[in-house]
Image 1 (cartoon, one colour):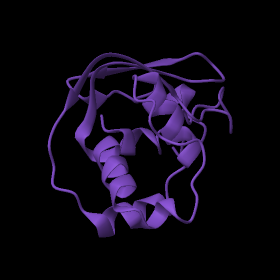
Image 2: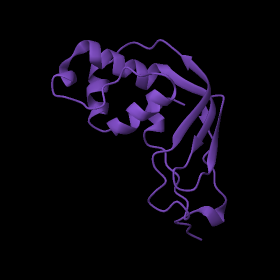
Image 3: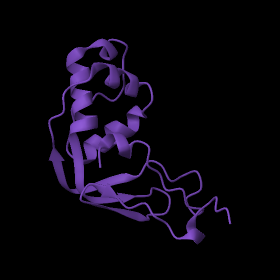
Image 4: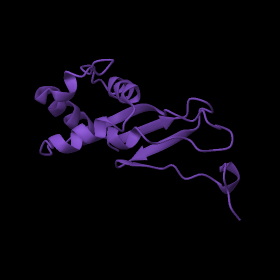
Length: 128
C-alpha cells in the first residue's frame, strides 16, 4: 500500500460514522521502489491530499523529514517535490495493519494490499 492510497482510506462503517479517518498505520514491512520523478503529478497531488495525514503516516513508518506545514516556497522547490514524490509513490507498506481511530477496527495489509472488506451489517449505506 502506497502512502498516497492511505491518504484516502477510511473506515466507512456505521459504528465509525464520520470519525473513521485517518487510519493509523502499524507497519511490519516497508519496501522502497524507484519510480521516476513526475513533477506535474506531484504538484497536482499536493493540491488534493490531506498534508497532515501524510506527515502522520510517514512519521509512523519512520520517515520524519516532512515539514508539518506546506509553504508556497516548498510547492515550487524541486528537491521538496522530489522528496514528496518519493514518499507518495516509492514507499510501500507491504505488511501491517491500519487501525480506525474511532472503533479500533483493524484492516490487515498483506502483500501490499489492504483488506477493507466489511460485513454487510457493518456498512453505513447498504442498499438492498
